[in-house]
Amino acid sequence: MHFLVRLSINGPDGLVAFSTRHARLPLPWGLDGEGPALAYGPYLDALKNFLGHNGYQPLLMAMSEHLERPVSFQEIQSLEIISQKHGALYHVAQVRAQICGEYHSFAVNSAVRPTQQAFLESEFALLQNLNKRFPLGFIPRAYVAGESPYAAGDGSPLMLRLFIAEWFEGYHEFHLSRRAPGDPLAIRVWDGCAEPTFLTAQETRSLYHQAAAILTAYLDPDAFSQIYPWHHAAGDFVLKRRQQGVELRLITVRGYRPLVSVGPDPSEKWIPIVHFFLNLSLRMRLDRLDGTGDLVWASSDCLQRIVSGFLEAWQQKAEGGSHLPQASELLDVLRSFTLEEWLLLSDLVLVDGLTEAEEEKFLQPRLEEHLTRLCEVLRQPPAS
Image (cartoon, rainbow, N blue to C red; front, side, top):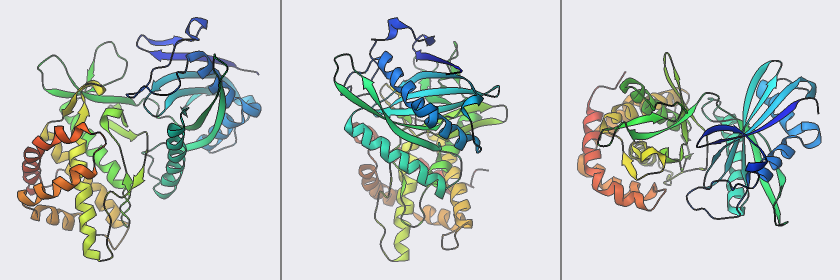
């Protein structure tokens, strides 16, 4: 080996260098907390062994595809593996490789339970397929998949399934939060700063516009398959603040399927379009306070930008396929629904779109307010 490999842990106290005192510390888990308890030492060793297999071939393959040129072992100057995030499905590490004086980051997602591993293998295939079909750059490129033995302390055999993907450098998770108890909800960016970072009103409007546009852009206009499930509470979207505004990316694709069947009659295609739109408008507002607290609901002020993001992405889709209605025609159809018709439809959409059981109890009493405001927004001139 001709370069330094550093191991680090990003925890509650920030980024710390891995040492022997961390070796037996258990990794955090997601909401369910089930499965074998992994420890930092053997976990980071498993990642290092995976990346370094056969002369670092997995890493070199990922870097070559990322940079769109062959990368040799001799070009690597240093490597850092950072334990970053631990959710219900995956453990996520960041790999920072220094090549010719520049740093490039990758995500390494790993899973140990059979159910997790099935999701991981599915997501790897979905990311590859969707990036080929929709070369938009809003979801990570998936580079290399494989496995690595985990050396459990009790000697039991465990195998991690892993894949290397694009890491969106400088992007951060965000959630609805409060500046102080009793204050209105606002978007807080998890950027690691000592003082909490909250988005401005303009940045918040842009966030909802972009998130709605991204999900609409990946909608299949024939079978109406869509990226689903997704949830703000899971940190599925990340953002980067720039001088000219915020930029959004979607870091995971857990599934891609239609939520409602499409009949052979062309007129029936309005059903999945309207279904997608209504479900989008509901779920865009839904989050958990600071990511892990109680379910919370964004202000209806975001609805105008959710609608504009949906229509903008739909128009781009329509311009690429002559069989699709124009955004103006779609807007006319959405405007034709009465509040009573939206309420009837929402009962079906709400059940179809649930990702957690408690969401129905939370959303049901808020539907009429949501749909009343949605009708008002649809009647307004589209946001520019």
